[in-house]
Length: 173
Image 1 (cartoon, helix red, strand yellow):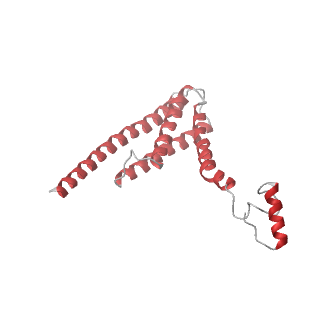
Image 2: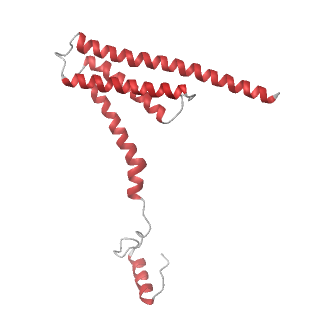
Image 3: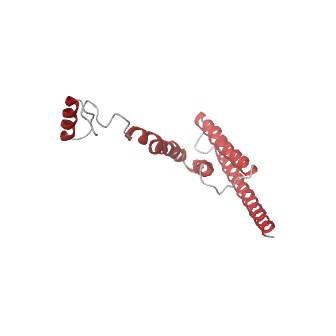
């Protein structure tokens, strides 16, 4: 009855997800390998922008390995039954792949296309600040509200606390 229908619908949804994942992975694989091939052929095959340098070699290794590692992570996620349309870390893998591809293909036209990759540490810094550092730095801790230095509260509150301390009564602050 109803249980069999639900299992059948769930099985169909899983099949659709697997097909969608396979299509996305195939497109990403073509993008990663295509962009890397364009970069390598232009830099080393055609020798655009003069002779290749150590910087070109470093960029080739770093961008190629980043794209391939992101693709590997997405493959593993999909193979374990995960959804590639999910939010979170999966989105960042896609972003890294797109930034890499843009910088590689753009690098055929200009030597400064790699500057696009500076968006990655900028974004990491932004996330680190907004999610970790700012809440830690600007969240008051216990005992900081009315410390002896008088930083907490206004003048009237500090006088009241001092008066109660002289009488031996605990303050209400």
